[in-house]
Length: 552
Ligand code: ADP
Ligand code: MG
Image 1: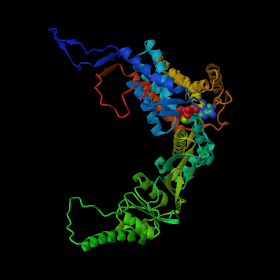
Image 2: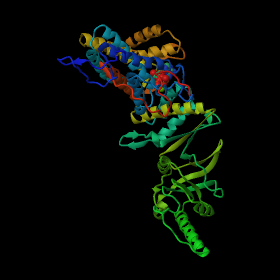
Image 3: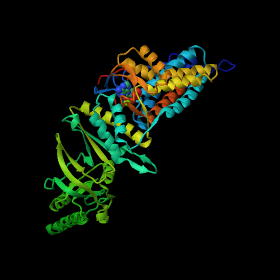
Image 4: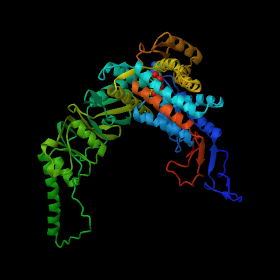
């Protein structure tokens, strides 16, 4: 922002009228637009080399010097610590896409950036941004229709198709094992709930626990829950088969009075009586747990030493201070109910698991609750050589879980490799002929922007993008619907033959979000920025310039 000035307005007598605070800067018109477009495009430039299975990875260093290696679009832009407001909008759009559909985060930034790039050229040709925005909007709507038209209907429980979807999504990641993709299919199908004639999946029902060590192939799907907690008392059993599990969210402790109560104790006998009474109360609590028939207890709060002792004596395996979120998942997994008062605990509240066992995972002891009957909540226990590997595996699994969910919930897919983009672009061109002059230009540009996906896929695979695009266009003209860029053989191929499939919902989200953010940025013709406050030290260290990595 170069033109730092308060808006100059002068009264008749020549007195300046100050509307904005001193130090406020304002950029207007073309310059504001150009700055914003530039900022948006830069974000696109950064992530585009990460697109697709042959995309490169990014090493990101935060202000503490911590290193993340990834090629996940959402993670890249999130870690970049961007300052420019328009660039921030691009970051947000990647995050929204991640939240809504879980994949396509690189694509959405690439598409938005390409839309901005084309718009810039039109603005240079004196096309008013409003016209461009209108053209883009109409084109986006049409594009959605065309995507839907070409989409293939599938069976939401078809494991083979879901496997292909999962594999396509992990194929473009650092961690891309088919084994992991298949695990996510099993996990999602396990927690899918039928509602009407559709299926609903809450991905929160899939708990991902990660621990460096062993190898990726040791990653497991557990039909139940893994708690990163150990069995609380050393003389409790460490393994219980046919577990009947009580879930409590109250403490097995004597409540301390809220106010300071004074108890006068005058003799050792009194002291003993007092302690005996406390002990008796705890013993009673444990008695109630045991009476319900439970042989395993998971408690969200604390368990008093004395209570632990009695539980151990009764042969109950107990875990304390479980997270609330884990309690909810556990209830779904074992089919039990979380009870808030030991007095009301009955047999009907108990859950069931074939096996509850404490196991040593590297240096920690974790409690595995597995073999649940038809659990509605499961755990993926991620293993891998180093912390960085498990972190990136976690990101791959996340994308994979999301795309499988997307298809289970909305069973329509398209092939990948830029095939649908090329097809939709070609249909958009035909449609755009009906539009009026300048709006048509914008719509044609939208089509071209869509083609940036296959173009960049080709570029990242080290291919000649122009050759590929020409080939791609001519084949789609001939009606080869699923011709796309095979990043591995380097040729234009039928992507359905390569089993590269993606959910329709991801494509829809990409088009919607990218056009939204691009038009939003284009409509801005005035940037009024208050002078920076002297910031208190943010927790992550001093504010960094966009793209500049800080030292700690
Ligand atoms: P995003 O974050 O947008 O999902 P990715 O890096 O995952 O970005 O790349 C996704 C793109 O890669 C999609 O357009 C998808 O069709 C494409 N793709 C995936 N697998 C292949 C493949 N084997 N050949 C060509 N393109 C592929
Ligand atoms: Mg992806």
